[in-house]
Length: 560
Image 1: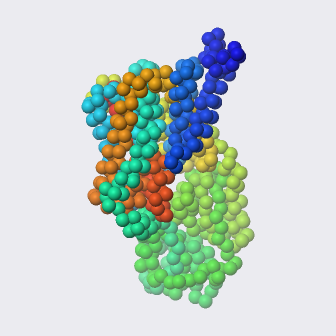
Image 2 (image 1 turned 60 degrees about the vertical axis):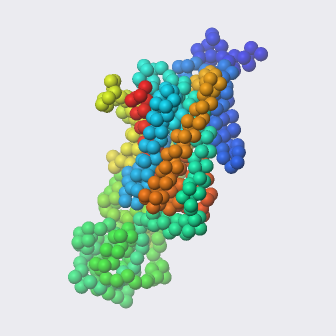
Image 3 (image 1 turned 90 degrees about the vertical axis):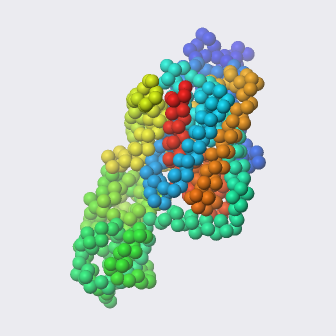
């Protein structure tokens, strides 16, 4: 019995109750938390957040680990979590501000600000500490990085002390944060008097328009005598557009590959790959659009997607490869993270890109050797950029700076610093020859381990005070959390429909992304056969995640 007692409750004679005790407690909390998180009630599950509640339960019964070890595991888990999120959203973070996503991101900003305003209002009305209200806010919008950012910000202000009520408020508000978002989405259908059939038809068109395919293939017959006799390079300089001429068919001849020195003549037929808006301009300059079956005419040529797996190609400009002269193939487009990009000469390659090459079979095989095309190489984790990024993130998060109205310096902390660095590295790392590619499974594993360690630490630390807090009036926090969940989403939904004229299914995806709420997205996606909710969610998620982390810190810094 003494052996079991030492394992579960630790031994005072050993540091931290003993390594075996600490590992056992963390393993039990995470294993049972993940297991219970998979249980669905009315189609809704808590997911990995259930680790928090299992930690609270064990902490309530006195099963805990050394506070210094607990603090380290919690902060290290938080760093891994936010860094892996930053790497994931980094490549699309700045792209989400382009024309197609500006309106959606504006609505996301409004929803986040409405949440902050609701939280501040309840802070003044209820008289609760701002630490409690920020914890409730983070739970109400199911945003775990916000919870970590708030705890880190308070710890910096209080000289290393923790505020258990942040985690308690989060845990109390979280369940209704999931359910409340789904109920609000349902309520909006009746408040806005949505015609589901009409919205479904519009979403089928609108979602495709919003995704805006980045490349199209079009056949053109040269008819403009002004460009007769000019090379492809000269036409590029004349048009100032990104496009690729993949193949050309001279009069009464078989199709040939094209390079910068190829001369165009009236009557030639060409295959152009470009962005939709650029393709139209190319057509207008060169001649007229025609229908042509290039596959049957080019039976000696093959088109194949090749994976870039050689590290030395990471960050290299496409024009520097001279792939046409060295391998005898033409690159028509590049697929990155599921998006087709025009193979412009100034485009920088990244490890993991899939390039579409056209040419004879032997030439394509030679190009495969040039690019690598080895999936095994990509499966090997690149640990150097991960830990360099973590180190830079910790340094950035530790730099103090002053904000008006705050008497002492402010820091981005262990949540904000690594998140910003990860976003920047994910976007610009390849430009500086830094290999940032990780497989989706590797990124997910890193993220899940990080969040599990963080939630286990938070739960164990909050376990002592959770039940007494609920019995002493903490049950009212559930109501406050519901208000923070419902009011911003309801007002945001009305603004999005009435002012921004968004399709309902795109709108509920944006609202789910603004709350960083995956269960709400899953519910929204079940309401339609289109992918409009997923498109809306993905467009605003990076900015919303960043703002949620920032707002949580600012509320602590301004009001604590």
